[in-house]
Length: 327
Ligand SMILES: NC(=O)c1ccc[n+]([C@@H]2O[C@H](COP(=O)([O-])OP(=O)(O)OC[C@H]3O[C@@H](n4cnc5c(N)ncnc54)[C@H](O)[C@@H]3O)[C@@H](O)[C@H]2O)c1
Image (cartoon, rainbow, N blue to C red; front, side):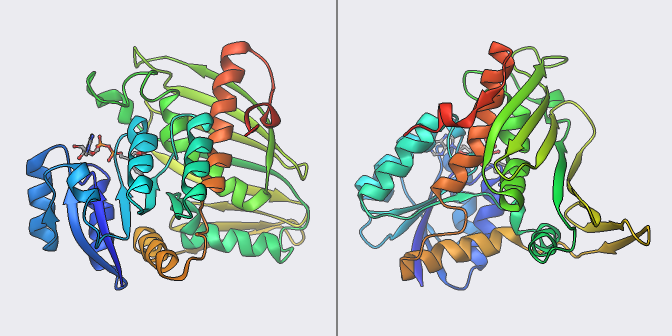
């Protein structure tokens, strides 16, 4: 049983809080949020104590790990404080707002022998796990291309004081917040991304890009397109195209289209609890010392495509990931 503290219990933190409360190998001992009402409500649901500050939480010697579900600009600073206090860390995706910060976080945790897990939960959906098995078993033949889109209309209602609103605190918001999930899933399918090209535009949001279209080339030759927009109706899928078959996967549905004989089989999948799985894995890693599946390197590789897309759009050029992955 790993003893864990959690920071940031509003927003998506409410979902992770529920997972940490339900995970059989976790004892959620302390919660903290800069908003004390949220922290009190979370404590009420879980019987965890409320810490008066992050520093107070980190002084608790019984805590082995900390879960951070806080705005991206805080990830690096809070990870470093947790590692200084000897804690293992689970941080939500993206690992940080820049690869430079992500690499600094990886170095910091590794130097202290602490686990750093990044919350890339999408690849854990049963449909995407199934696509991965199909690719590995050769069911698609030679995979030549992928296509993904994770978009929603979050940008239409976002308050100007929210950290997501501005480029300074959340650059290329749809890609940083949504598309990065697809990148991690495509990396899981195809391996290392090597070159990126992207167009972005600011169509409705005033202080951030809200429409992004990105091309990614993988080391194994697979070419991928990724749409991610913040001002449109919601959609979330990854598709892979191969010489024998194509697959189109959402969280709860997988379509397989075979070439010969040509036909489509659509299979519904119940939604699995990816958050419970990842928090349970974090606790198991603390206890065993084994590195998590979505470790700092996975987080950096997903974020690298976002960073490269931002540079590509700004400088109107194809960006090699070698350029930004120099540690
Ligand atoms: N895996 C996913 O599907 C998923 C989904 C949504 C968000 N996220 C990630 O979760 C993180 C948080 O996003 P969100 O949507 O919950 O943001 P949010 O702004 O809705 O909530 C952030 C929470 O952190 C608290 N907080 C802010 N500053 C703090 C501080 N200094 N100390 C302690 N608490 C503080 C806030 O009060 C709030 O409760 C981000 O990194 C985001 O990318 C992941």
